[in-house]
Image (cartoon, rainbow, N blue to C red):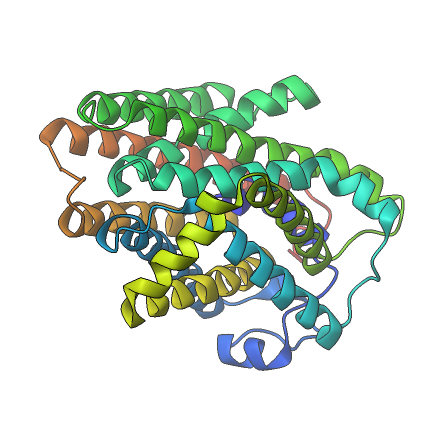
Length: 355
């Protein structure tokens, strides 16, 4: 969702390329070659990996909360972030990234706090909302991004009226879907919207932070992930320590008593969180915004359909399906506007042939 909205920001942050082995598997260029020349086959493979990981992540987390009766989102978020920090730190040693800098931490700390808010609140809201409704609400992120870009950067989107119509469709669809699911947790819906606002703030904040990072020589994507995971891990540790019994000891006791099924699901979910971070890294470096947007829409449809069949808190009424359809239509219109804008920029660019 982030990368489909602003691919160039992500590609500029990525000073480091994916490993040679991964690129050979993906069919892309060598690790020291141009990352912008990825083939269609490469983009499809990356999209399948990223979309599949995101889909499984959503369904496994929901399984933990509802099917296995382990409603401990803070514990899950803390486990995933600490393991993610460990994995990124090891990866940084292997591939070589910038050394830790307290000055850089101060620069990226505001967006890292937004990363924390989005991650934690997304997991909390998923424990309170049905999977189809969670996906429908997440589609409204475009509206928040455009609003924050206008407030923080004074920027209006190209093809303004088409973009405005797309956002209106998305909001209308989310409203219809929500109206048909009023038996759900209104508090969960509110937390989902706050998490979406945090995600949009993270994206727009990165654009501001990037200006300062460029003056210091830039920052690789793995380094950015390391700072995000570090800040999130510290904040989650403080949340857990504030009241350790319901946030740590009770979940640990319940998971231990639940047996191998719970431990297996929790382990796979944690590993998927790490894998998702890496596939997002591949998505940033090797795919186009159109590919990422289509992947996000396919993931939303798949998670909504599977969620409605697999979990007791999900229902697919006619009005809900209409709402989701309008939301996806709005995303499609927005994607078309972004594609035409990017094509026009490339056409008039002196480097158009190289691109």
